[in-house]
Length: 215
Image (cartoon, rainbow, N blue to C red; front, side, top):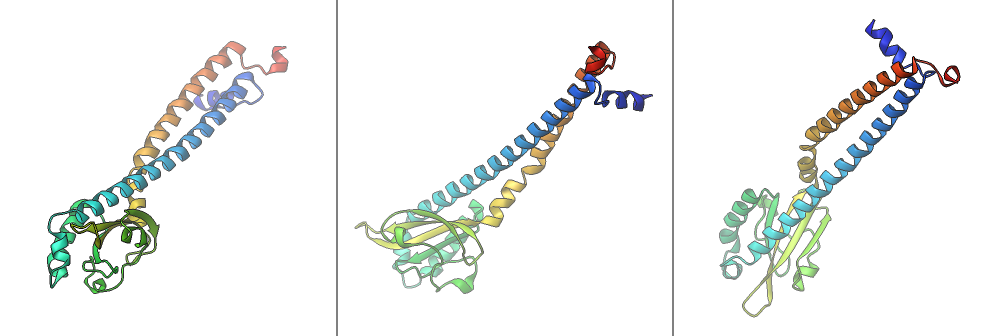
């Protein structure tokens, strides 16, 4: 009996059936558009959050007490490596790297990369400007913020690079997708149910007739 009623609602010849199909198509299109828009917004927000965190960490570490003295010490790596790693783990970034004014690394999450040239755009930082860029790095494609380290005479004596891999940024966004898809799916179910109720009422009022029969 329930199956017959449902099939009668889907009778596209009747006014109620036509209205139901039209409303269902509109609901599905709106749901799809909303899902795409929300996914793009989530990814945009995750990217902005990663960029802001990278810049904040790079600038904070570049202006931290004792960093200039450490850069001028006999063994900068011994002083800076533990501090850089502690900041990296606390901030949730993938790397916090300190270099000299030539771009040679004093710190790195992978010890075998210390002493090698920094991979990334450091020219703006060498001229005293913090920069954010996305490109290939030693840990893969990454969002990379580079901040200059100034001495007391406002001369650039080193750089601090901090960033997060694009893979991790995507992971931050993807963790929100199940909740997002669930909310959209629930909305679609409610909207479809509402559409079915409207069509059912309309079918009763039109007695299941098609437009020609009603005329």
